[in-house]
Amino acid sequence: MAGPTTAQRGAAKRADTPAGPPRIRPEGRRLTGRTRLVLAAVAVVLCAAAAVWVLYGSSWLRVEHVTTTGTEVLTRAEVETVAAVPVGSPLVSVDTDAIEARLRQKVRRIDSVDVVRSWPHGIGLKVTERKPVLVVEKGGKFIEVDAKGVRFATVDKRPGHVPLLELTPEGSASLKRYGSDRLLREAVRVAGDLPGKVARETETVRITSYDSVVLELTRGRTVMWGSGERGPVKARVLTALMKAAPKAGHFDVSAPTAPAASKS
Image 1 (cartoon, rainbow, N blue to C red):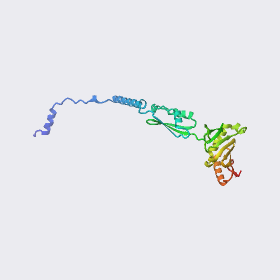
Image 2: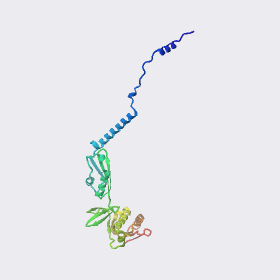
Image 3: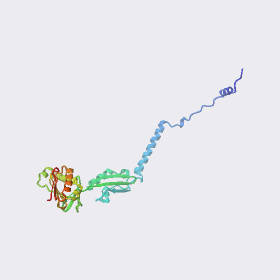
Image 4: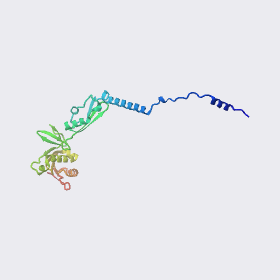
């Protein structure tokens, strides 16, 4: 009978060799889920604290300059003085809503203003000024009225190409029924509907009642506009009428379906 092979003898030898001490896994070196969670929370807190310090405590993100755009009549100095932006304060802490409200309240020429942060060191003031569509003369000065009927400024000199409003409804039924403010808004409505060329040539808008608005143009011409109703239609009819009768001195579009033109 054949003896054991070399492979079998090697296996038997390994089986007879006593095993060494068991290998211990480094379980103690592993981080438990709870430990990882604590470390992550600490990291978040540290990052948040660093962010707060950068925004509020450091000198990196503070207001250093103010930029104003959109001014035409107003000066940058006038706007920035009222805005009172806290230069040197943390940029993130600037109350932009309060600045906007202060400018709209104290500077009536401002129609709207947008206050924006311009990182890392600026505040921007984007101003939109009111535009006069009519002026009212009072005491030798002129009160500017915008397209919303707001009396927003008093100036010494009448602005160019802005019609003078003559509001003379004394004793009229319209004054009792609508009041002077309503008639003013009606005049503003008419001024806003005028064609561009006519608007530039209009010197006076005279309103004596709700349905009686008369325009006085350059070269002694007049336009009977009537009420402010159907303004866009009247504007188109007036444009066509003036082209058809360029030498006429009086135009009537109070009834736009039956316009008329005459020399006087």
